[in-house]
Image (cartoon, rainbow, N blue to C red; front, top):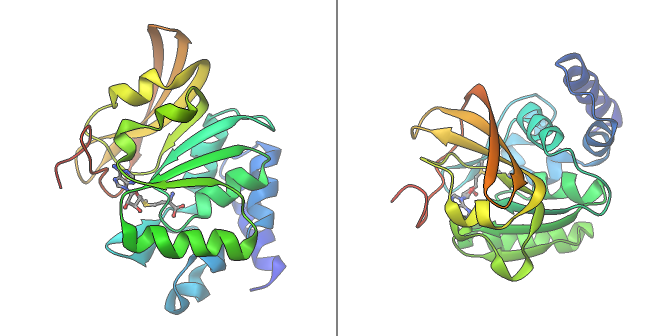
Length: 211
Ligand code: SAM
């Protein structure tokens, strides 16, 4: 896959309003085709979600860029991702110099993605389990990014967000969600901006959907 195709994707995202130069730079560096099944690789640089098996998807590049930008990260920020999936979002965060913690509940995705991280030298801390419960051992996090749609905001994730930190999470029905951008202003004050119409696969877990 040529560098030109990645550059064209970066141009498109910047035309669509992505202006965080660190996000754009990471998208310009990460080879999205590595995170996509062979039969789909030709579509790697289209701005669309693609199937990765197990009924799951790698998110649309615009969505990855937009959610990452909303976290307002710096080098060295500590971020928890729920829904490792293909590993692409984690790779973007890693390229930005972020300390990445990522949780996946589907073992059939988790194992190959761990192997891919290893092959590509992407050093993130990953765990298999229910991400709706967060990862208390490493909390608090400067950012939490939930890459599956939830019926509500899991309490444990609110608790594990650092004061001053931001969480992005799609909230709504099983088929359509709004993106909540939540800032934890003090230990018990949260401010939420709501951005309409995103569509994610369901977040399944104790504080998510049943199945
Ligand atoms: N961030 C991923 C990427 O870059 O490819 C997108 C993955 S996909 C849109 C959402 C993922 O969330 C799926 O892999 C799914 O198995 C996972 N998931 C759903 N509920 C989960 C939960 N409670 N804990 C952890 N992962 C979950």
